[in-house]
Image (tube, rainbow, N blue to C red):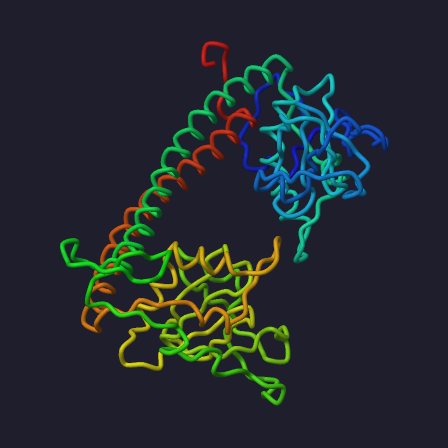
Length: 422
């Protein structure tokens, strides 16, 4: 073959000793090797690799009778998810079952398998972006087979792999350190909310027992109440007579998180909306997920029109002049409150709680002026921490881009690696 495909069109030149060919002449891709029913008899449980596991690194343990997959992978196999983002994973665990939408790359005499681990991600996304325009991206084995590939000498592949192992490990370790700093800052924010909302701003104030087990002592001049006495819940809903062309921003449970609040998406029409898009929410309402409560999908509602949330939320609306909505939003984010909600939820894999049960929970009630000061202090501290976290996250993003750029430059021969660089 005399021409390099679109994947390599931005290359000015290639090393003279590198060959140009197609993958189909040099590698074989398959779904592991056939699974025999008694293969895992000596395991109490075993991992099953699915598409999402290649992406997020999480592996679930399965047991006999839980699966229908037919292929096995072993330690040091290279596997690829053929849907979505097409991530590769170097499997370094025990024998496992491989989902049929994942494939195993077999080593050949032409390729050093570890080199393919670095080379393929550079090509797969480009191949897919050019070839497919569907909502769910899907890559076939033949897309890879037909793609052009630059092939360094096998010894140079080995040297490249060792070099990239070393450099990516250094970059990954630095990313982990920064991400740990971000994690600690987020923990600090949670600790500040816990402290200020349940103990107040003055550490020297006289305290008394709250009578609430998970809270303990509180400032002497603070009151307590049930949430139901100070708020209403789920006040407004869209009924079936709603104008089919009524447009609104729909908020699902996955659109809300503790860190970033509510993600506002494009508007949808009522006639195209899911049946759970029914709860009307307004500025200063507080929404709390009543499903998968451990996710802490809690937020105060911004001042925007036409917002509808899922029936998977409980919508709290302050009905008392004694309770600030902003204070309420911080109170329901405290670790203790969330733990109480989770503890009183039903179900294992999909825990849920009824809105009416949620309103039975205890609520601390500082004097109104103190609520304002607490909200102002938390907001101030949050903004400071947010700025620091954003700077650190930019560093992480730059390192990720540098790692990606380094790998692509090395595997395409833009940067030549020698033995002394390892």
